[in-house]
Image (cartoon, rainbow, N blue to C red; front, side):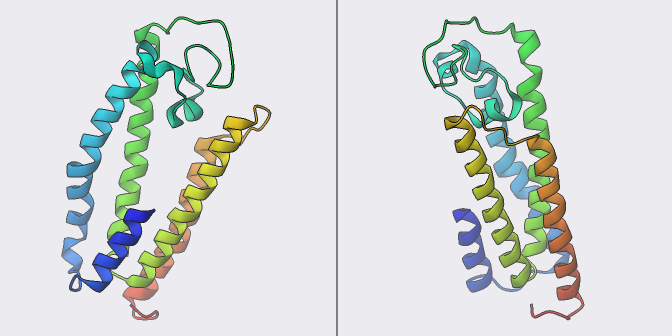
Length: 184
């Protein structure tokens, strides 16, 4: 969330107004220059995780996919018999699918960011929605990490719901700002 607030300060206190025809550029360029290199490194880490010393550490990926949350089977919670790493062919599709889904959701976030670069009110609401979503995800992740009986439900469905709610708030606000109804 901190980078969002830094972007807010830079955008609304330093930069000149943004031309509407630059909006597509504000989506593709950061996605290509920042996100895709990160995704390549992250995918590599996820692909080698079960076959490396990283296997004993639980990652957010494990929580989302119910995957190799520590190959030793404990998820970092205690002692268990050592299990063997899954065969690569049966495991590799999970990190690839995870990164592809993450990329689509991230691209959606870049689109929301592009809209927020035009109007300060949209950016403040968008950053607030990101903050709320991050707090909720962190709460669910850490609660599930310490309480084995806690189940946050289907994380994909809740993520899609949160995304739909965010867009239902951001798009009308952007429309009103575009039409001059709300202060820019």
